[in-house]
Image (cartoon, rainbow, N blue to C red; front, side, top):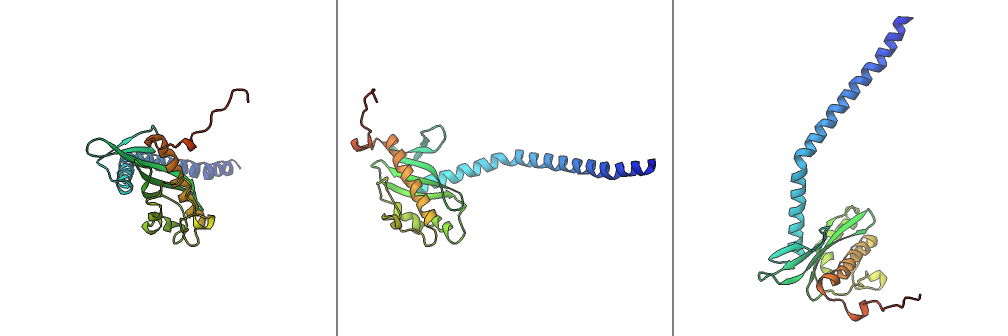
Length: 197
């Protein structure tokens, strides 16, 4: 009877200890791999963002204007600000869509680039294509809308939610740019209210 108890314990404990050891070793290997690749991943992301900034608003230099790194000033060779590049995030059909928008000093959109999205391949993923994104170029209205909503942006066929999400992200960027370009008009400034309300 005692032999059966020991063999029962051995059949449970031995595989458990082996599995624990394997999991510990694999976890350590993954941690080491992460430690060696994290800098390379960050460098690749920074390079991708720099290339995207040049794509949406060509400039001699870019400098971050906020702590989060979502707003960059774009400067010419003389150091004069020629616009801003703003990264915004909106929710699409398949998840978050990260959009970078270049806005010239006069408030006009110079270019739009989708940095990341998780939309349906063949439908929403077409939102990354230049044919769709070029519709935003030249606009300065923070009230852009897709054609189904009465606007001038032609929505992607079968991907209206994605089209609306990208348009919303561009609208957000135009609004944010007003704080960095000084293009706030009198109608954008809220009226002062009394203290007795």
